[in-house]
Length: 554
Ligand code: N01
Image (cartoon, rainbow, N blue to C red; front, side, top):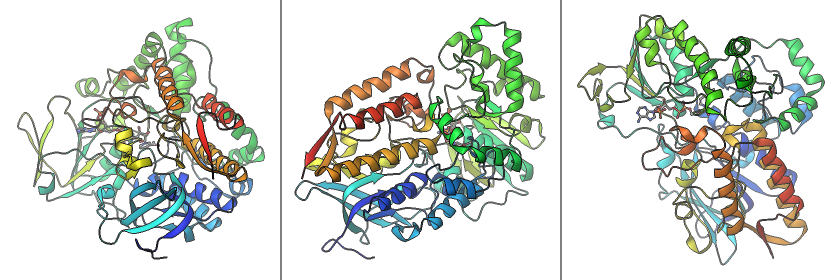
């Protein structure tokens, strides 16, 4: 439907984003009998799994846990093919969900929401959008003459935590004559690496997944590493139909278990409550070895204090360092790959054949921690020491302006025109990661201050969408027009998030959890560790009449 400034279309709710959060929110709003419209920059649903088409892209949460639980029929009918789902399969799943519940008709694709402003007079949100442009970073698409305007009672952001690509501002980037891409905005048509000299910049989850696959076909692959990372084998494999049937026979049990686990995942492996410091190192290494063979985050469940106590962390880290040294044949290269941070302090990576890839003749590792990239040239790139690297393709696996980037790239304004960027000038401030003071009727799905990226995203999404749905239902049943997080509750919540994070080792390294990967970004720990406690708190807030929120009668 076409709209314009003079005659905007009115909806009950506007949802920004049609990834897993956006499509489930749309479904929920329909169930409540509300009119809703979702806007999506891509040309299909899937969000992160629409954009991340890089070679090797795969989820690090097991398929049987990384899927919606809201409809038992859906979970029974969908058959996963591998232990960890690959990007194409997750995208097909998102498309299946959107088709199954007839959601496509309420999503406007190829459209970037540019501005959302709360109108103090009407009490409604005015939302402007424009055609999305620019493959590599269309988040900067300005509101042009084609801007569309609609209004809504509720503004619900479902923009994803890791969706604003971070492409470093390197001199000469526009002069490169080869092919250049970012893993999070990977071209739909793919890239043929055969016979090409390829450079991958970045060794986080995306780089570590892409590097072994690119190395298989590239003539030569040069990996530019700023910080070495710990990686644990994923041990992906085809999913045994009998195993899948067994889970499906009592899916509720797995779902309920997930809801009580620390990261809302890992229902199928043991979380040991003991301390690694209570056992001999040999015994600990035996346990780590067993979990190394199982693969995945089971490794972190070996002992309960790995993420909290430096001494405990060292034991686990030493085990992985030994594995790197055993795997990489050139000792000098192995040392360059050994991290000096606490394990798990940056997001732990699950890999397939990552370290062994450095034994290939056609792979070179370049340490750019000090010898930084100074310039991208028409033929490749140059580092501080003056070395030039001739490249046909440059892949930026340089991550995201996480958690706040996609929200702040939209001009969001609350009461009296208050820009969100101003409200968050010293870092994101939310209550429960769901509401922001000064921004009535705005809900931020998996917003900063909620567990989100520190837990199974699908579980977190469902928990938020269900909570928001119940809240809107409550408001309508009780004649409340607006809901808004109070300053006091927000202040206390931000303190709570910082306190909980301070009990862990997370704040000790320069991770995207802290915004440390983005030059100039305020260093604040953004997600909240601790899923089950958080979900319980949200339930308590609702049961207490949405304590910490101001509810305003119509
Ligand atoms: O991004 P990252 P990612 N010059 O930020 C380096 C999820 N995810 O896309 O560590 C040179 O982790 C940067 O170096 P440093 C998952 O939650 C999940 O890989 O900042 N290098 C780092 O090595 C993950 O954590 C899955 O010093 C620069 C890399 O680029 C999150 O997404 C798969 C640089 C970025 O690593 C993000 O992962 C993929 C610069 N200017 C992603 N800037 C799965 O489910 C940054 N780097 C498996």
